[in-house]
Image 1 (cartoon, rainbow, N blue to C red):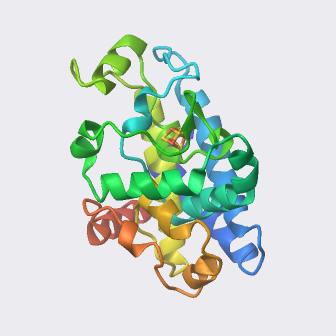
Image 2 (cartoon, protein in one colour):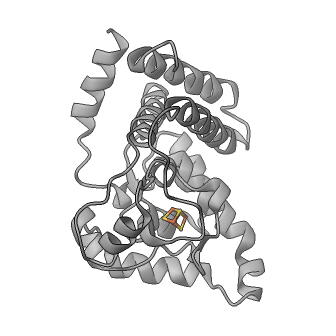
Length: 244
Ligand code: SF4
């Protein structure tokens, strides 16, 4: 994005995701390839855009922001669901019963909005001893939330103080990459909404065939759709940027 500007970056990234979807349509690694592309694009571009910006305070082993609502694209949820299903026994051997946690958390938070989700003070089911069990596969939303002041962030998570300052490059790059992913998925005529992570995992974990249903044009994650993401408005914005 260094020389291109946000609109050109969005267009190029949409095309790159579109090429991956077209080239791997029938392959089992489609979702993993799309997500790897998204995470790689985010990490590279956030590094570029952060040059000269204030240093972030996040150093790992901190779960302060893992009580926020996490929204994710369908590929990100299918990827994490596959990870949970593949590691169920390994985690159970460590007394971590992920499927139960996901189900319990999903039931507790329902479809809460951002503020209510924070007030519920319920951790993401993937956090364990302040570590994300799926750190390398965490969604763009988690990657894009980077605090500039750790104490302020922890205090806000505990319900005190004001909104903590966060890194603008992380927010902007996350938004561009996530929206480019959504736009490519939309152009492939697949369901392209944003879904609440825990609700999405509750639906997708242990449910073989859901990815196929999505690839056939269905929206099996629909009950996890967040209500405050307007598809028509987003489509119109994406089209306007495409023709900018
Ligand atoms: S997916 Fe990982 S980083 Fe994201 S909220 Fe859950 S535990 Fe935290």
